Length: 236
Image (cartoon, rainbow, N blue to C red; front, side, top):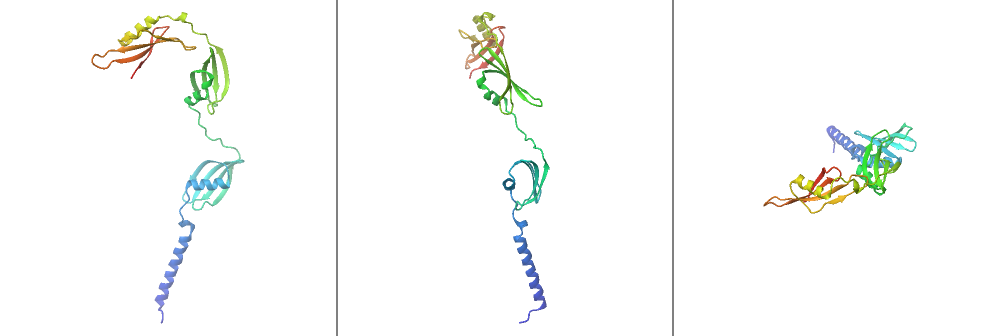
C-alpha cells in the first residue's frame, strides 16, 4: 500500500505536536510554583539565619537573610526552590524590630515590688518606663526596661505616714456630703481608708428612692481632707 505525500506531511506534523506537548508536560515550568512557606523553609535549610524581608516575582523569590557574618540576598526559583544566586549585601547585623511591653505587662512584672502608684512611658532614644512604687512607708522610683521588664535603676525616699489627726471632716460630715450630693439617704456609717502616701477618704453607701421604680444604690468616695466627692460608683 502506497502512502501519499500528504499522509507523510500529516504524520510528521502530528509527531511534532506530540513531542512539543510532551516536552511542555515534563518541563518544570508546567509544575505548580512552591508556596512562600516552602521557599522560606528551603532557604533556611541551606542557610540557617533570620529572614529580614522577602520579595516575590513571577519566577523568582528574593530573601534578605541575617546570617552569622552579615546580611545576604538569596534569589530562588519559585518553581523548584533552586538557589539562583547568593550575594552578601552587608557585613553588619541589622537590628530586628522589637515591641515594647504594655503598661499592664510592666505592672505584672514588678507587682512584687510594692503598691504601684504610677507608670509612665518615657519615649527617648533609649526608651524606658518610669514607675513609682510605695512599700512600707518608702517611695521607690524605678527605671524599668520596656522590652523585658527588668529594673535598670532605682532610688528611694521615705513617705510621711498619714495621721488621723490631719483629717478635716468627721464621719458624720462625710455622710451628709454624700447624701446631699446624690439627694439620697446615706448609710449609718462610713468607711475610712488611709492608703500609704495618699490622702485618706471615706466610702459612703447612699440609697436613691425612685418611688414605684426600683431603688438605686451607689458608693460615694469623699476626700477626708477637703470634703469633695471624688467618685460615685453605682451598684447593679
